[in-house]
Amino acid sequence: MSRRITVILAIILAIVLGILGSFYLQQGQKVSQKQRAQQTEQSGQAKKDSKELVTPRNKSAEEKQAVMEADSERMNSLGLYYDYANMSLNDTVNAFLAEQGIDQSQVAFSYKNTRTNETFSMNDTQLMTAGSTYKLPLNMLVVDGVEEGKFNYDQKVDITNLDYEYSGEHDAYVTNYGGSMTIPQMQYGSLVVSENTPAYGLASLLGGMEKAYSQYSRYGKSNNPDVPAFQYEGNKTTTSYYIQVLDYLFKHQDKYKDLLEYIGESFPDEYYKTYLPEDLTIYQKPGYVREALNVDAIVMEDSPYLIAIYTRYLGGSGESSTEINGLGYSQLAMLTYVINEWHRVNMN
Image (cartoon, rainbow, N blue to C red; front, side, top):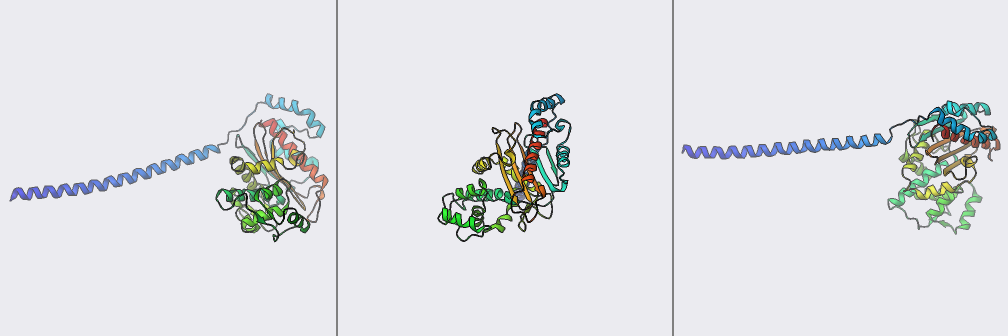
């Protein structure tokens, strides 16, 4: 009898120990999985952070001076000789503005060196009228939609009943394209020649222009807390937002290769391409309306950089202006040279 009780107790003890062992094993596996997940997350964050690690380009005085000497003839011929080698980008821009009689509040810019991740800016939270620069993130949203299977490049989009800004332009597009356009046709029309009817056609795929604007935060967030990306009313944005659009585009060049081709083709010898060498690849999206004259660009120097420049009231332009102000345009073009030359001297 005593032996039978002992055997029964041993069996019960073995069962209990087995249950406890299984429980602790499961708990250990859960802890291990959680630790691995945390390690993976931390590793991913470290990789993400390392991509944005700032590694300043510290060129020697001799290296800078060599570029100054090589470019001095061009600088002097344009009347744009500054002490680029010994001035910050902001100081250089301010020297140019002062010489031109332009108040600092009239210009906002954001700059990023894609190789070193160095950034510089001025008035980057100031709301500026965007003009046609809204068309680049609009096109990016449509490309995203194609990749997600929402649209395809062969489908025809009805343009007969679109909202429009200029009836003559709208009617001409309806006539020339028989009332409908494909996405590539609208991409070309909105980016290469920067017209509005193709842009409204693209926006119709996204539920209309206002709904499209609400999606622009996909590509970045402004340092202005009141307007994260674009303000639909008045078509306003900030350079702190738009530099992120350019950064996103630069980092996803394969995805948006068609858009890059279009903005690389746009406005030859104008805006950012006015004073720079023809063999320098520049992807640009200018924007003009009333008082605003802007240009956003990816400039493929030896060390590629991104630049968003937004201006207002240059040359005496105002909210009632209906044509590009000649003096204002000249000042913007000269400013692009000044910024590029500073980059060449200090960053290439």
